[in-house]
Image (cartoon, rainbow, N blue to C red; front, top):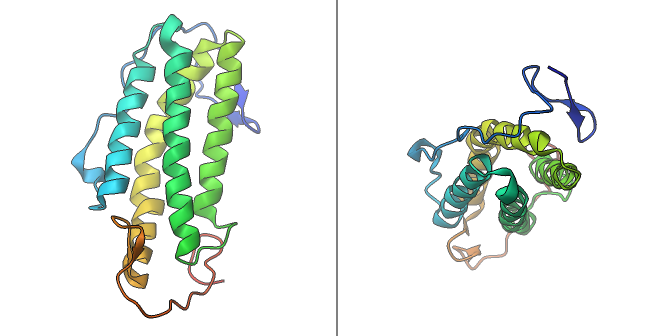
Length: 178
């Protein structure tokens, strides 16, 4: 099988075939182990998993509309998280938001490749997204939610649980204050 590269040269799996246009088995089923106990985030994650499931099971004729729906769903979710992170002291260049931007760039490149008839690339990207998402939730999102709790941010209301002014140090990179 040929190897293919996308989004800055990331290598697709070695068992990837440029001719594989058949739907794959869903790479990710919802698992309550991914719950963060923050309903707006958990609800979005469940929706992302569901939409991803429609992508991986799509026939070629339905693949691109479903892929576009996935991009839109993820864009809305990432915009929500990124906005909350800015509100609670994350620097604009923090690695969590940067990862969101990279994933969206890759998804949009997949859309372009799909429009060029490269459905196998889109299917492989969907499979790899299903592998990436749990790791992102279990690392980046868990840390983000812990940070929200530490500064008194309530994602259910989009506000703070206290009236006192919030003194924030900009969180840069992937760690604490910077």
